[in-house]
Image 1 (cartoon, rainbow, N blue to C red):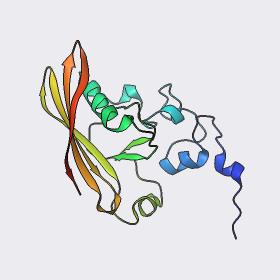
Image 2 (cartoon, one colour):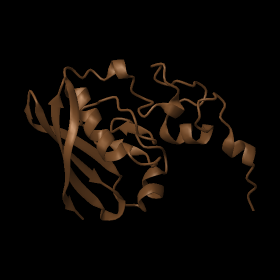
Image 3 (cartoon, rainbow, N blue to C red):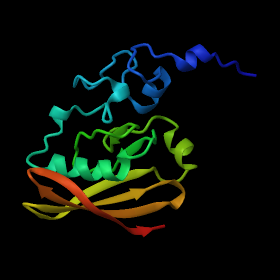
Image 4 (cartoon, rainbow, N blue to C red):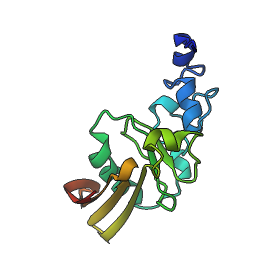
Length: 174
């Protein structure tokens, strides 16, 4: 029989709001409260491995993706890890309760089997399409474990200098 010490499970050595176990599992530094050194503690940072200043996104792209992402994923209490598909535009996101990791970051050892029952990993990708100076559509494709997947279109309009979501539609599910 194995003994589990609750204090070891709950330990947060750097005081950032994530346990040491959580930080090691997702590949962030349990000894530094702000792994990407962007001024936001890892426990409050949606993208703890990507500083906002390092995403390299220009113009309205960040605002469009941020608004679409928040409308789709931010209005929940989910703390589920979202792994972003390699090749997806790297945007520093905010407003989601769980960590968002980009595809270039390898999953922790054992993550695949534990999270997907041995199936392919859970991935999220997005693309901005049909963009004009005052409108845009963001397409999200989400591939979950055990064959679950869906597509979603998010429609945005720019009004008074800000991007707003005006409609969403699920385009497919499996």
